[in-house]
Length: 325
Image (cartoon, rainbow, N blue to C red):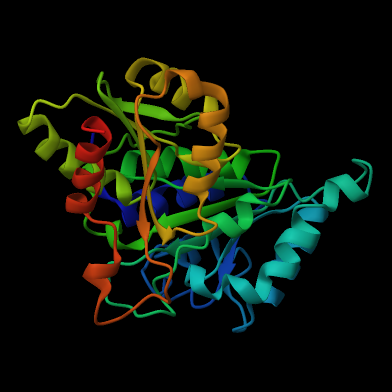
């Protein structure tokens, strides 16, 4: 299998989807001949023409409104929001139109063919307008699916599944991994299931849950924990809406301890939903409180980015605190 980075895997998935189905369209700010600000759509306009891969005006609400209209008429739009921080002007279109389109029409119409791609998260010295993690805002919205890959193999398989899924999907891409994460990726067409978490490592003492770039952080923390004889089970949620509570609960019943980590601020972060659900289902099996390792409840700082991010040392300390409670 060829080795790809995360960007190449995403580009390959888009290429496969566009080659297979002429109804698949890619558009957004600078995605055409320029290939997008990160080059995720490189060469797609050359291969499929300006009618199927094209630039839009710098208006996110218009991008998603246009995408909703295309999807309602049977197209399969893949709309790019250049940075997830700029998805908020399109918030009304996504939560009040995209998510509710099928429901309000009594299933007469839908925009299920829509996929929204957005680079998210910190780690690139982008400051507070290019580093936020807004996934929790959208997990509160029935009618959407929220997907986050952790590596190139996952990115290609999950993106192809998202494009072909009958529901609208927001596909958050951890941008600090775009070129940093590499791995073997099959050249052929394949899909990974949405809504199913993956146990990436089995263990017996504590369960760790994350998604996206935090999975690499968790792996580094687990290396430190194992040197102290702590056995860690690691779960990548992959999909946040709907999220796989059953897999996490089954793990927690085994280990009795749970640590959840994400880059977004703690208050209102998705780790809170995970903690609440798991204490309802597994309370009598808990050996210690469920812990969250997250970003801080502040705007994302430029000069203090390293201090803000939940790194492997913070996750390691949470593991020790949970096991030694």
